[in-house]
Amino acid sequence: MDCLLESPDETRAFAERLASALPPNSVIALYGDLGAGKTTFVQGLVRGLGGDPLMAQSPTFTYMHRYPARLPLTHFDLYRLRSEGDFLGMGFDEAFDSGGVVVIEWPERIASLLPPGRLEICLTHVDEKTRKVEMRWT
Ligand SMILES: Nc1ncnc2c1ncn2[C@@H]1O[C@H](COP(=O)(O)OP(=O)(O)OP(=O)(O)O)[C@@H](O)[C@H]1O
Ligand SMILES: [Mg+2]
Image (cartoon, rainbow, N blue to C red):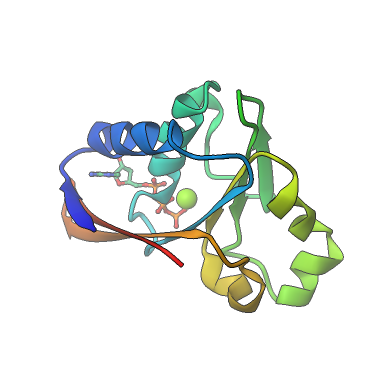
């Protein structure tokens, strides 16, 4: 499916509704260019899972943030990750079955490590305020 999100708040609201339908151990691979709205989307996920959305920022200097919530959310931003080996070496793959929800910005960086049964979401620029969201299970 795909649809248009016409403001940052619409993107947050879309993610918030999605979050309420996610079972434990969900993994979301969140694709999109710089500024596509991935972190904005994560803010909606945090709210939908019952956490504090203001806590969701771009984790610029760390690869991983955890937000406490009804289902805890683990947020990866792998833009600066150099190799899949680094991801494994830091033990990050343990997050995939820890009972919460995992969302990954720049999932391309760990393409061969992404678990099956995940949700793939792609955000693309349409214009300044509009993004297209495409979603599929894989
Ligand atoms: N419809 C929209 N949905 C999401 N963000 C939007 C939308 N319209 C405008 N924006 C703006 O686009 C920017 C998206 O920034 P955000 O940090 O969420 O992107 P990102 O994909 O996480 O980028 P990066 O790859 O650098 O981490 C914000 O400034 C936001 O206000
Ligand atoms: Mg981001």
